[in-house]
Image 1 (cartoon, helix red, strand yellow):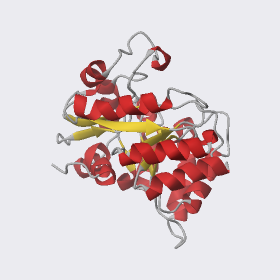
Image 2 (image 1 turned 120 degrees about the vertical axis):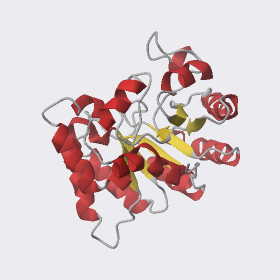
Image 3 (image 1 turned 135 degrees about the vertical axis):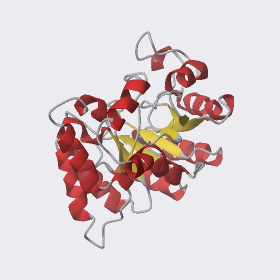
Length: 268
């Protein structure tokens, strides 16, 4: 079993009452660090999500940015804008990029976005211009066409690297389309996936071997570990990934190397 450094690419910080998920979701840096710093976890994210026309967006982003130094650089700030805010979203994106943000969070379900909208593409394209990685919630029970929309988004924003969270949830076999499009020269190869929620959902199920096979088919170099704290327990999420039968080298990719490469983090 791989027992080296681990990066948790998907955890949420609570900065105020509006961010609270449940009673276990403590406010600020300390509860987040205490929850996700399990095993050999070396870095985790501090994700915020912007709502439309929300005057608190800049303050949320500043809170995420401050979480990095406040945690001794253990936490990776993940800022957010709402694409339907138009020019204001782009201006805020420029501001946080100048302040050092390396990741942007967009959530089609929570923010009520359609991935195919021009406003979403504009934000994703601008993020790529700043060298930022975009972390999307990648599974929607409300939009069956979303996997194809993500593919078109990648084609239209070829300079932007995107992580699609949750490996498409219960519909994870649909992601086999990426093993097909990888064969074409026009495919930018900028889509990655995180295992948050889905690994835990299927680890102890009849579908566990299928999940592992799909991940290997699309490539373990394209998949990252995430806990999705506080919705999931980080220790349980990590154990779920480790139970899926990956080799030590595959676990190293999923648990550390892929995220470290995307975010220019330590490779130790």
